[in-house]
Length: 250
Image (cartoon, rainbow, N blue to C red):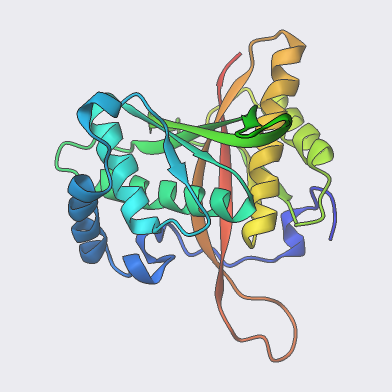
């Protein structure tokens, strides 16, 4: 494992957006739409709780949570999801990919719009223990239309053992250097721990940029791509998470 290695280390095969096929619960676009409709009635909080964050857990149903996110975005324009632990964060970001696909199927969906996220962390007290605190990953999502890409993005890989501070520095550097349209960086990760590390790194990267005082901001568009490992006897195809970091201000 390495810290923000070049993406050539994985040699991925691009498979395009396959948002609703990354879990058995969302195996096709038609089923994804059905799951979303059911989730609107079963998984979305009551109207008086629209401002409250949705909570992802390690056992969250990705299709239902994705439907809840999409429903919240339709009604209020944005959705906030909180998670604690790497598995919960992984479920949350997979649900964001599903929600992106559900929203894209809306008849009135803006052309080219995607569901973009901003990551942050906050410390919360543990109930029943005045001295204990836990870190919550907060994902705030809203619709965003990416600008056309006019130059190749920087490619980074985050593994389970990657130093989050170093990965964050690489992400922040890519966003600072980006002046044209399109993503500043594509960040690839595989597995719950690695993806969680990438999300934490993105949150830290924005902190670094805020500390610069230049007003540089970025949003992240998550997605999945096909990946086939190199080497003999490795014909099994799997998925890897790709986070597209797009500079939006500064």
